Length: 392
Image 1 (cartoon, one colour):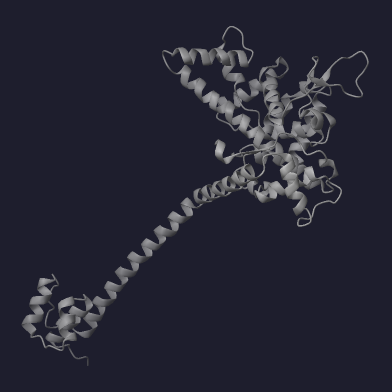
Image 2 (cartoon, one colour):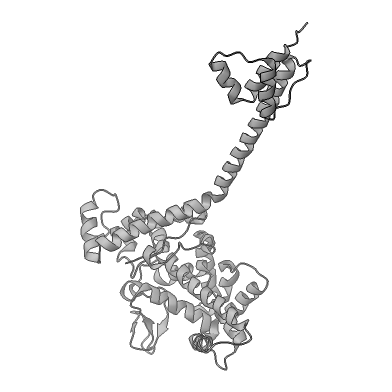
């Protein structure tokens, strides 16, 4: 048979349970408190007095309940903390990646002001990293640069941001890289940020266009801006509907596939000598004559001062030339039903880009499919303010 705890001991148990400081100090000083004094101290601390029938089991139950409540609060707090970490983890990674990239980019900008300095640096380090022995230093610089910046296509396919690295020209001997995969991946890394950045500029203009059109009255500056956009997109009679159709992006997968096809993955003479990645024709002076051109034809391949200029001209071509009207209309239809602007959805409408027509678009489809280029249609460029970009 269990004995009941004496009333005074119940009071002491409660004071210990609620950690009453006055009682604790009295116990330490070895002073005996009367039952009345204990009751007054408990009441002062707003602790209900026990009934005379309290047993040890009852006091233990109180302790257990208090512990359960404490554990429950701690568990909820811990779960909340873990959930918040999981939620903000992607943002933390984005910020961390941007900081790391900015640091490396600043180092390159401050330490190396030209290709010769870069070459000297990597000439010393070329024995540290293993690449094909017969490729030039120019190509090794590019490979080392991407490695230092942790620029990896695999991570981009799973959602990582694209590094804002803008090369002005292609390495001279990509074709000498023995690994086909490495060669293709290097080419994609070069053109990917350029393509996305130009798409971003188009989207910024498109956003501004719709903002201007939504206003009942426009400022003089807005009217001038609008007039210039009609000129940029070769639109007569200031047809706003046509401007909405033309001012839009070219899917990244299509742009990469066409650059790969027209430049031989960055190895053609036109690409290396004239930064011409998309094989656009010209009849003017600024061009490179094809070696196999027929005598009765006077066309040349349009050349550019830097790779970015080639990307800009290519997108302007697809967005203005009459031969790609169907491409633009189908793209507008996707916009209208809020569908993703996908390369595989639109590539079939570029049959006028080459004399081979539908055979050409089938080749592009194959390039997109085999190299999984649609993974890049939704790729996002890392914050590309001037301080955190690298142009070489």
